[in-house]
Image 1 (spheres, rainbow, N blue to C red):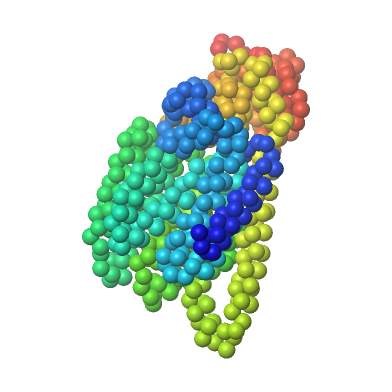
Image 2 (cartoon, rainbow, N blue to C red):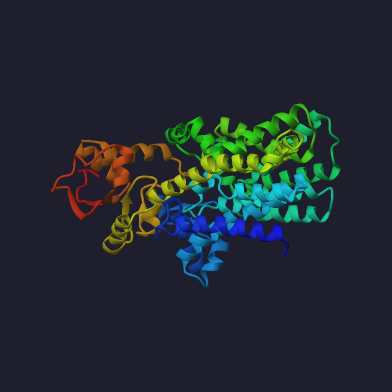
Length: 496
């Protein structure tokens, strides 16, 4: 192992240590992580994925690629589930530094620049916000996507990378449907190099067309029922329009820039301009194609905002080394060439202020969003004191907590595929929490056969209410009180 490899490994350890430090600040996970926990535990107990979920929406069919859950379940065979879910996703995310290094070195042929870029990749604010404590599948998707980009860059040099590329495409397809982003970016790449006037490689063309057909065909096979049920709206995962608008209005342009990082963004935009109008480089055009596609998807709201920003962050980090190399080259020709390390130090300081500090801020925000001990106690009380067939009302976000921790049926959660009345359920949940009319609340509780109302601080904040106005001793019994209140429904409307 040479000096550069040792430094790269230390960068990996530094990134992993920082991520684990924050992740282990709480024994619990963010809400999204509990869906993963449920899938991992189910595979560990039954050996097959949870495709038929009898608790979500009171019973429904799920569609998802299961490989990520199998990987976590494999480690769960000999390690505690909490340890696996805290450590393994962060190991995956920290390993991005290795992939960034080999791509940067391939593009610039400069190992020092590649090492500096690998360090930058470890502290992308968007990753600390969305993968630090969520057990997010993107912790594995992002490094694998970057590795696929590297394999595609190398296929002209060595044909063995064709096999690597195909294998990785199949693996990524079994992990998450976002592999279609890669396929789309490769198609944009074909158009871009045609417009630029570069010669089209036959092997690249065949590989792009083959992988695109494979991905589209397999996605249609997996999600055909969802396609038939929702049509083109399946692209938005059948998310109710009100929620969809909320997802894209919760972040400003400045916050989006903040999540990507100022240094990668500025250097990346410079390279995009430089290679669109002045220079030519196939590898750079491949990265630009990704940036263009993700930008278009974000503008059309065809990709989740946080997911799009994560992918954009990686692309801008990969564009950074070429700009940094050019800057060092130009700087070396000036009268200030002796002060090269002053330039590097200045960039490093700006990076600390605009990427590392925001990463720490977002990590702390992520921990604040983690499930609280009092929520877990309330949900476990429901598991111990409610009937196995009882349905629990909660916010849509908390629906997965009802199924994963309380192991009870929920009225709804955030997975809307094949839910025909998703908009209606969202409206009805909102009505139950906010209506002052007892008859209206009881009517809706009867409609969904809800036995318990889970009234948490999250619900109070989401709906702007601090008590359920219609609750009285006749029709509702407060069976649990802490920071979470749980009410048991006692009445039904006559003529039901």
